[in-house]
Amino acid sequence: MLVLYALISGWGAVALLTLDVRTAGLSAAALASFIALIAMRRGRASALRHSQSLSRALAAQSRRTEELERLRELAATLLGGHDL
Image (tube, rainbow, N blue to C red; front, top):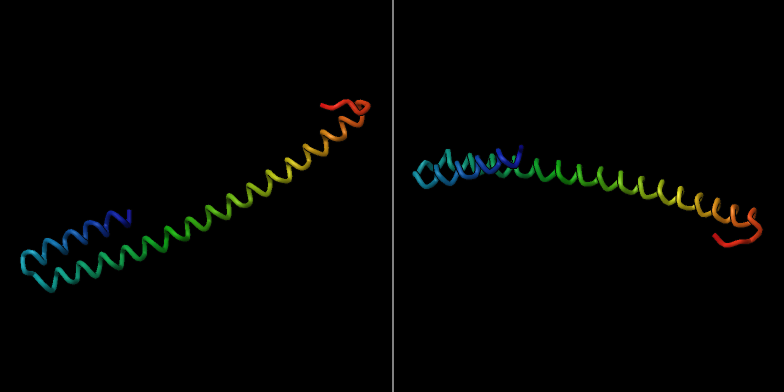
């Protein structure tokens, strides 16, 4: 949603500067830049949280895979060495 506001403010700045309303146009451009920076920071924070969540999920899956491998080896041993 912030990106939408930044785009609207940016295009408003372009329109105001085209109409020779310099002060309002520059203010709108500054506002658009500020909103865009906030959106970028939020996006990076969200990406970091997502990356950490994926890392935790991969670690958990790795532990489950190791446990299944141990169970497969145990089953093979209990079945008299027949390969599964």
